Length: 142
Image (tube, rainbow, N blue to C red):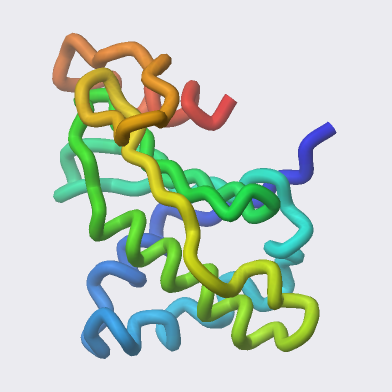
């Protein structure tokens, strides 16, 4: 049975909108992962709301050092992938020896009907309407 951790949708909003800028934004969310065993998880899920109009999903696979961004409309989001990578590295540094597995470069993939990174799985369906993105994001978590 896979070990999973789920973050609130507010997590990424705070990470993205930090007044401290891209380098300092991790200070704003440092308490969110403090009691979580992120380095031992198989999957870490981050629901992401884009401009209060679209839901996507970020998934971190720590054991594979892989971060995926799922979007049912096919939009890639390199900024999100980079911020999640930065957060995982921040957590790795703050955890000392047990967090070493979170340090270093991560593989990052945009996964969607038309925006998949070369070599990434391209198996998610395309959203055909303007209102079911939340359902798609939940299905990607499965």
